[in-house]
Every structure is written in C-alpha cells, then in structure tokens.
Image (cartoon, rainbow, N blue to C red; front, side):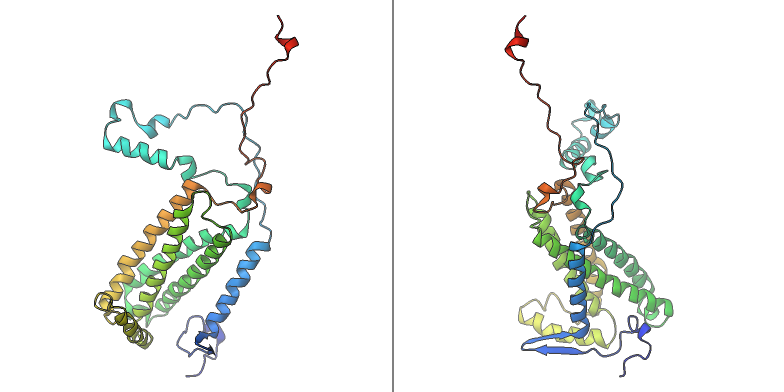
Length: 302
C-alpha cells in the first residue's frame, strides 16, 4: 500500500505501513523514534525557556488575620461531634485543609515550564475520557465509517499520544528533581503506578480497534501472556473482555490513582527544585515570629 498522497491526512489515516529501524535486538519505528526525539527537545526547552511572569502580590500584613466565619460550618457544631459525619469531616479537614486543597498562591519556583506537564497530562486524560465516551456510545460502525467518527477516533488516539508524551516528560522532570524528597515518597509511587496502569489501558485500546491491526496485535501478544501463566485470566483474543477492561475497569483505576496523586500533591505541596533555597520569592518565604530584644540594664532600672 502506498503512503497517502495528501500528507495533511496522514495523522488521521493511519492505514499506511510504517518504517522500522533495526539495531541489534532492538526494533523501533521511525515514527516512535521521532516522537522520542520531540519529547527530549520539549523536555530540554521546558528546563531552559523562561516562564512568563504573572501577577505579583504584596506581602501579607503582619497582624493576625480575623477569625474565619466559615470555621463553624467546616468543623460542625459541638453537639454533633460524636456523629460519624462530623468525625469524618474533621479528619478530612485535618488531613487536607481547604487552603492546601485549593491554594490561592504557589511558590515562586513553580513559574517554570517543567511544572506545567503534570497539568497537561490531566488535561489530555480528560480529553481521552470524553472522546472515549463518545466512541463507546456510537460504536465501531460509527467511528469506522462516518467522517465525524473518524475525527473522534483520531482525537481519542492523539490525545492518548499526548497523554503519554506529557506524562513521560513529567516523570523525567520529577525524577531528576528527586520528587520523593520531603515525605513525598507516596506521591512519587502513585505517579509511577498511574503510568504503569496507563500502559495496560493503552494496550487494551489497541486490541479493541476491531480491525486487522488489533487482530494481529492480540494474537502476537497472547503467546507472551500465556508463557507467564496469565492467559487464562487475561485473554487478549477475547474482544468482549478487552473492551470491558478498556472502557470500564482500567480507566476507573487510572482515574482513582490520578485523583489520589493530585490530593497527595496538594497535601505535601509542589516539590521544590533542589536549589530552591536561592530561588524562593520573598513574598512566599515563611515569616519567623519577631521576638523582642531583652531590655538593657539601664532601661530595666526604675
């Protein structure tokens, strides 16, 4: 089959054959090699490009802030303190106060491109969910035949590619930043588990394309899975099982882990760079209490 004459349709028409490079025991397609190169370039640019300056805020006044009028609504009344709902609410507030859950400000070192890719990963994940729901409701007969179905199918496919690009760059940044510092080990672990669960979700997505490509992938993969003893539980040749895993279970698992990861980020805060001591904005630096000096002997005399 010849490549499509119109290169503009190549990102949507994925039926043309690929070109592969072979080196020793490794085989990689030119498309994947170019994608990895683009990821490396984006990762490097995120480290060196200046971040656009946002609004600056004056330092908060030193006087004590007034009492929060919503504190009673958050903690509940005294007569209801023994109820399980009140105990659960107080535990949640202690675990993740509203100021950490939805902070108004972020430290100055967050103004860097390398901190953007976590949010871009979540944005791509939302596009995957919305486009996947549209594909699930319409079915293969729609997204294999109609123009709008082709567009939605391509939107779902490319949002998955962007999801992995942004997630891998995010993992690169956090690895070289040693993001597990400051009691953030569980934050790092949930991010890695989300990446692994996403790989399984994407794999089942290739298996439910209902074309010859998905058929070839499933029958090539079943031998490897059978060799490790999980073929009886994870039958990649069973379209119904793979479709339910891809559309129901695995996205739910990834979504729960992503929410857990974001809540941990909110609780522990955004990990600072290793050299963040010299880069903290004075307005964001913690203020130490002012201790009055002891009076001199002359001042102490009556």
